[in-house]
Image 1 (tube, helix red, strand yellow):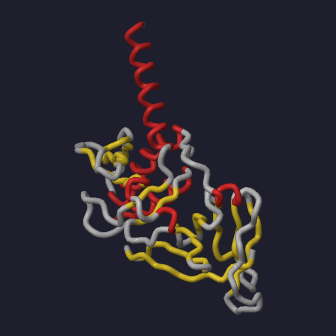
Image 2 (cartoon, rainbow, N blue to C red):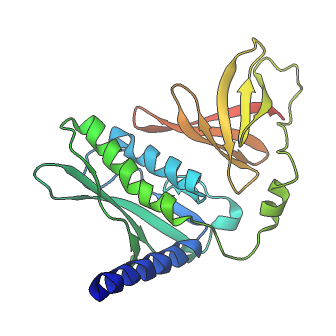
Length: 238
C-alpha cells in the first residue's frame, strides 16, 4: 500500500512541477510540419495543435508568422512545441513535446492513442487525446502582468477603420466567450472566441479553423488551406 501511495505522490509532484514550468510561458511556437510526416500541416495536425494550445490559454503562433512586438526579440520567452510519433504495431501513438530556447525538453505528455487504421482519422484522434492531458493540468500564465490583459476584461475590441456601409463589413454580435461575425445578408460568416489577449481570437466556421489577429490596426484572418497559410483582411464592426 505504501508503494502505491509513494508512486501516486511522485506522479502528483511531477505533474505539479510540469504545470509550473508551462505556467512560466505565455507564447508557444508551432511548426508547420512535423518530422514524422511529409508535407506541411499533414492531416491538419499543426492546425489542431495551434487551435488546442490557444484554447488552453497560450498565445500560439506558427513558426512562419510575424509575432506581435511584445513577443518578438527574446527567443527564450517562448516554448517550442513538437509532436512525435511513438513506435507501435497495433495503434497510432502521438506525444506532445515542449522545449525551451535551448532545445531542452521541459514537458512531454503521455501518448495519445488511436486504434483506427486510416491515418487521416487516427492521427488527429491520437493528438486530441494527448491534448486531453494538458486540459486537465489547468494551464494559467503566471508571468508579469501585461496591461493589455487587464484591458481585455473591460474594453471591447476596436472596430476596423472603415465606414460601416462598406460592402464587405462584418458586424460582431456577442456570443458566449466571443462574437459571431455576420454580413449584410445577414448570414453568420465566422465565429471568433476570446483569448487572454483582446487583439487575438481563435476563429471557426464550417470550413475554417484559424485565428483572427489585429496587425497594424487591421483585423487579419489566418488559417491553413491545402497545406498553405492563408491571410485575409477583415473589416469588423464591434
